[in-house]
Length: 138
Image 1 (cartoon, rainbow, N blue to C red):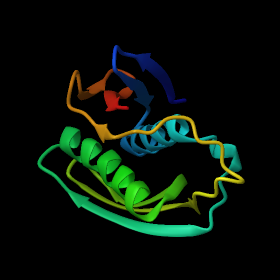
Image 2: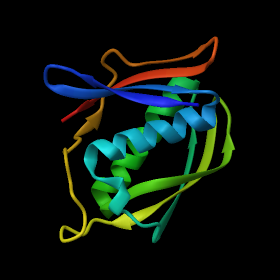
Image 3: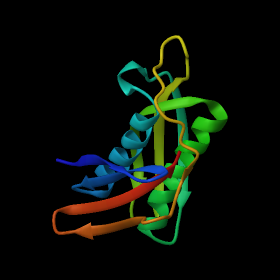
Image 4: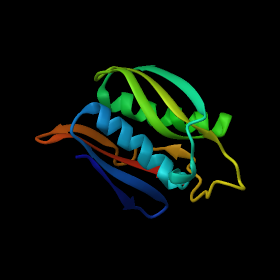
């Protein structure tokens, strides 16, 4: 079973993420990032966004995935909580992210994430699956 851990950093906050496969790693990374932003138990699956990405490596793809979801949050104000992967390998991703638009009367927001950084960033395959470490500029 995969897991995430919060990594405290001087001016940032980060996540350590472990997944048995790429789908679990990518899902937990997105869930972890949005759980830093808001209480996801309050978010319903009302809005759908299709995300299609291609990158030169799994590390670039994971970064681009989190960056794209953060961009959609910033521009469309959607808190995502569910992810359905139609295609996912080390260089390609096609997924549907679902959630709902921010409602300040309903949603408890925690942190504002400004960017997915590359500081101390890593994604690698380990003996038990995939591991990632990512810091967010807050």
